[in-house]
Amino acid sequence: MNYRIAPSILSADFARLGEEIRDVVAAGADIIHFDVMDNHYVPNLTIGPMVCEAIRPHTSAPIDVHLMVKPVDALAAMFAKAGADIITFHPEASEHVDRTLGLIRDAGCKAGLVFNPATSLSYLDHVMDKVDMILIMSVNPGFGGQSFIPEALNKIRAARERIDAYTARTGREIWLEVDGGVKVDNIREIAEAGADTFVAGSAIYGKPDYKAVIDAMRAELAKAGR
Ligand SMILES: O=C(CO)[C@@H](O)[C@H](O)COP(=O)(O)O
Image 1 (cartoon, helix red, strand yellow):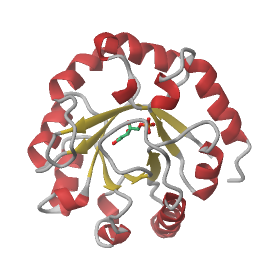
Image 2 (cartoon, rainbow, N blue to C red):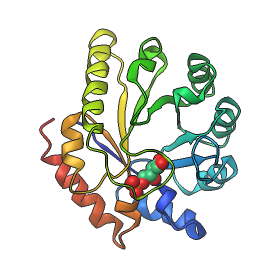
Image 3 (cartoon, rainbow, N blue to C red):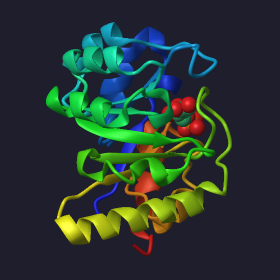
């Protein structure tokens, strides 16, 4: 299994963002997770396309933009232009899920849907052909440093079943990402439930030695029974 670790820069030192991104990639990160909050869809306000454009020259690692915004389409287009590689959004925040997925892919990015703990996976029913990544939230979005909600494991299993059935039928791969409260001590269980891509903010940026945390996560993933 090809596992990917995606540090969330929400927990980085924003005053030194370029350096923080270079450091975490040097420590073994595969992807940079970029949280966009609008103080409307979620009760917090973070960073926009100008910051994405500013960090783009600092890394060749994929930038994975998680849009916690409503409406979605205009910002999705701006992030594609600003250098994002992957753009995910919450289906209930889009007026037209199929069209939003299409506009992200037409702009050259991978597109994904994000599921809050209370959002049904049935949003996937008619759009799997346009989905490159499914992101399961294991906390309610808006803040870093929250505890993993155990019920998310069942949702990860259900998403994995959908992906495996789809891949068996079409041969096309879809990534399964998990975000919220991911730590060294639960990453193995999350992988065994079916995730392949792991967002971790406070677990990595909250420790002085990023490489030690990422190495410990990979050691746990190596023991996963998938
Ligand atoms: O999208 C979010 C929170 O809404 C996340 O990406 C957090 O940034 C994850 O932080 P930790 O739970 O890993 O500290």
